[in-house]
Image (cartoon, rainbow, N blue to C red; front, side, top):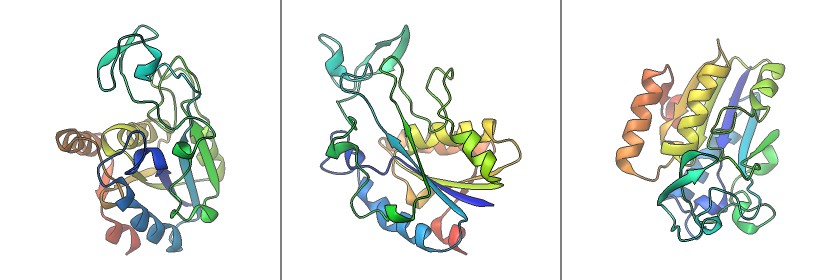
Length: 207
């Protein structure tokens, strides 16, 4: 059973969104080719789905500005612009993404006291989203993942997939993903590779 995990391909992380990843919208056409390829038995997607006033938002902390470091529940936390607030346009999937082919959507980031980069669990690793259990129940043996952003949600999802889905082959599709910081992207890819994630292109995935 081969699955494709699309990570946070949402308006908020694309140009014009509240937390845009440079060229984030360019992943959509590549993701659509993967979705439409017939190579995958299961297609799942994660969706950042924050309540208003989430604790990771700079606006929730007096005097804090976006992209400053702060604290959340006693731990260091990057302060983000308000983004992907539930039931807003910013939180919706990119309109060109072929969402009609998605079999399962895993929402994340709903606890205002902890951020959730990974599609599999909160950043404090205490609360699981349920995605790993769903993939195990479906009998997934191979998981390809891609999306936004490489150096945050994609990386943490890949690393958690390795840990939480033992025996499943995990691959990161590099050209179907974009990151925030080039140095961070390189470090993220190196870390994924070191932890056992195979780095591939969409051409490899479609071969």
